[in-house]
Image (cartoon, rainbow, N blue to C red; front, side):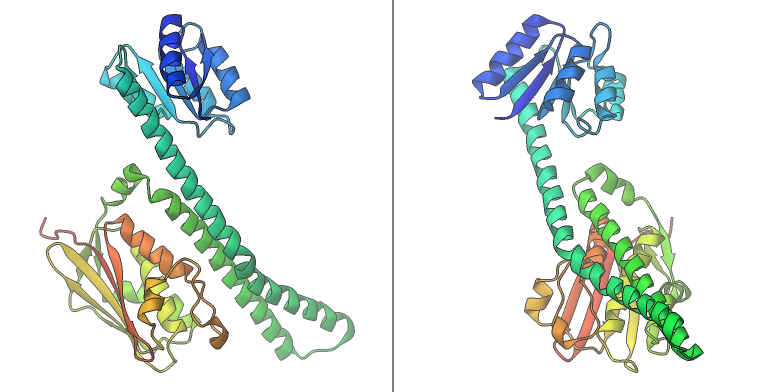
Length: 366
């Protein structure tokens, strides 16, 4: 049964709310002041708290502040009851972390609608967290095991050689390179998993998404070259990259975000096409949208594979030495969505792949 804590120094209001909620089959906990409300919240951890603002000893603001600083109660939805609808009071409560406000006297329908809305949002957030937990727990052990095994194996060889054998300098250098290469891979995996988790949690944070859409960037050939050079160097594909932007392209995007998107797309192009074949980056733009397109002549994908792209998809893993979790492409798609953009994939097996990043354009005439 869903548990709701009501904190109010007015017994008549407490009793009224308790009667309404119990009729709707909620379990109701009641506290006559802020200090008692804090004690009950920490002991019982309710699913939602309805709390008066003006109370003796400790106000509703004090209750919220203390609960938001406790790991056990930090995420409990919190609804203020107030006899004042002044905007400054509402804003202050929201800055402390309140989820909603109800102004006294309130209608029963408004009380129930507010509570149900907040409980539904909390349930959706918990489902999102559980989905993220399952995603990470399913993929992390395998993805980290591969580079860790290599690092441990080569480290053991170096110790063994140093104690019992006399390896050549070239052999030692080669093993050191392998250790370094796999450590870099592990670092990149870690950074990508952390970014993926952050983006998953941000997908339903509309306020934070709005803040993402206030940035402007001019993209030109040299800037794109600077972004992709570390990737092409790693894969020894510097001569294969062709950047053909006909003119500067004006995006509404943070540079770090579009750089990450382009790097992940070029990483995939390098992994799944042969050295010596071209990887071409072009641009298109209209008044509303700007786009970067990356084309390779690699092995391509079927329509089913494109439709099933997810964070941990690995295509034909047993047939290809390069191992990509699909996480990079998932991150690229999620970053694009933050800006109300998207990624379009066109591909045919054995004929290559074209990936188009489409984002809102910035009006460069301003």
